[in-house]
Length: 232
Image 1: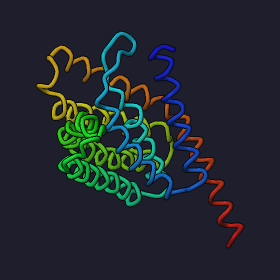
Image 2: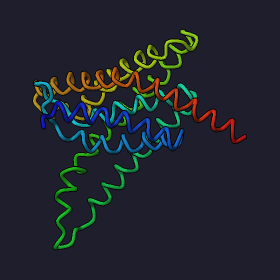
Image 3: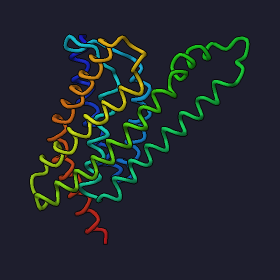
Image 4: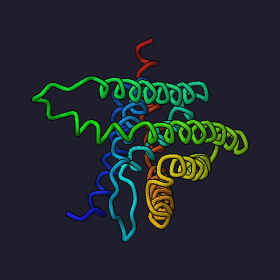
């Protein structure tokens, strides 16, 4: 199976997963998805792959879906809930980074086989995490602000506009900050540029793909609201 087919399938799976978690766990599920996606994508991002003739990082699918999750929180639970999700993801990333660095400091047993593999993955994590944390805070804070700015300007109409308008710009900010901190000097300049451009293109495609999913999320939210009314 080609990387391109896997990528499309992975993207759809992740977007559907966000809705399913929202359907069964509501707001709490969305907060959990932010933490899960952020931690997982910071491991996957170490792996580079060829997609559509260009080199890109693997973690952009899960990371891009964080913007959908944040937008769902913004739309249905307000700016405060969206910022709470952003901060939860940030704290989880900081703790995971610190804890894994502590784990690497332990002297492994003679018959241990995991240390070199953990070192290969998480030894590189501080720079990845620093880039991710900086990019995450800048882009997500902007995304929440832009979403509500556009919502106010359109008087709550045109959900697709605030979803895409906030996400596409914030993803550009995220990609520039992250790739500069995490990968500048690690790869040759030509490869770095490919990763920068391709990462944004992949996120942009994901941002456009998630548009129908936020409308589906609206139906899920209405279902939750009706259920709450019936149980009151």
